Length: 306
Image (cartoon, rainbow, N blue to C red; front, side, top):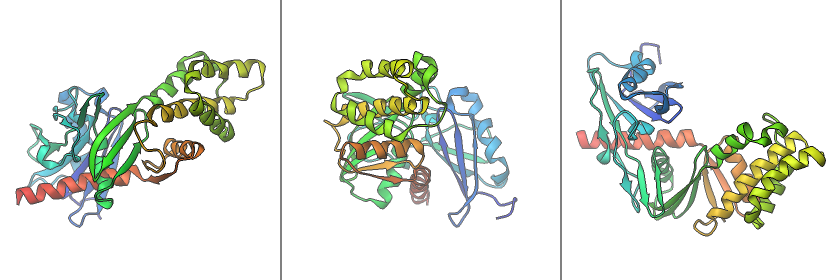
């Protein structure tokens, strides 16, 4: 495509920290893929439209409206326009439940997909429901467990393609807090991680999750008096936190065969941890699946508006 190519429509994943867009051509190919650090957490409602235009201005056609399908935190109460939650159990919400945003630029037609809520135990998701829809596009009627690793990891139980229940674990954020703001920071490597230490920690804490607090301080102590290397310390911290998460969800979710929606280092760590406790996991590219879910929503939009 040339630099003058215009988008047939635009897919947008608007998280707390980042915005990603995929400008789609008439044949369904991506003509632009761009991102910025202007996530929901940095923006007031009036700032969302300019942030979108910064990435999409040159692919908008001056002679028509371009539909933008958005998932994620732009639809939160603190976001651009609130898109009310759909309650479980439910199928992943689609374009019929989307909220239309009032915009100033006449070239834009923006629709925000809703998130999902669970009342007991209370939980919410925004953005992950679109990944689930993308996953189900190739796994129709799926029954089993999905894991969407990240700062706030989601565990999801699907029954014949319906979301029955889910649970969010703040393991990624907890790791960052311990690694950067606790006494443990003095003994951790910046990035390198010892794999054996990680595996050993997963197995230990999974068998004895009640030792979590003591095992965490043990990382500091072992660095001071037992020669624990910074790489092993980082591996142990990660293993303790992910292993304790697996112990926390094992009574509610089947961990024997998990579909992991992610292909980065965090997702691979979850796959390794599941293997340590006798489970299995298959990794699927989260970005591809997110775009697939947004494309499904746009396809439904075309049918509704035809």
